[in-house]
Amino acid sequence: MKMRLSILGRKVWNEAQRREIGLRQAGEKSSSAKLSNNDAENIRRLYAKGVSYRRLMDDYSVSKASIFRVIGRRTYK
Image 1 (tube, helix red, strand yellow):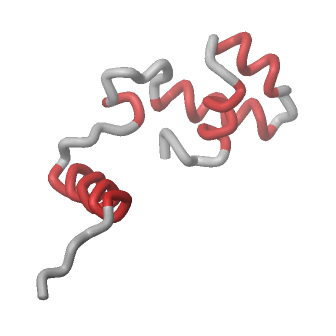
Image 2 (cartoon, rainbow, N blue to C red):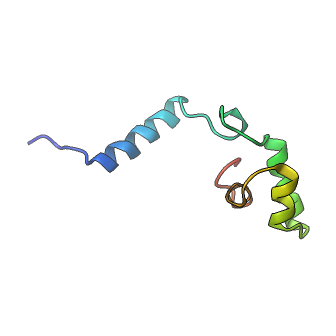
């Protein structure tokens, strides 16, 4: 009996394969990156010093979600 991957399982597997062989770019290497790795480090440092999300959003011209992902190290690890 052949095993079949579900559609979701196949997408997850394909994404893992892309990352493993280097086809998936992350951080500032991504073609859609709006921040540099240096910007991300500065955002984390400023947030730790008490700078608000709103100020960071305005200073770097990105969304609250982007700031949240940078601070939480979901992007720009």
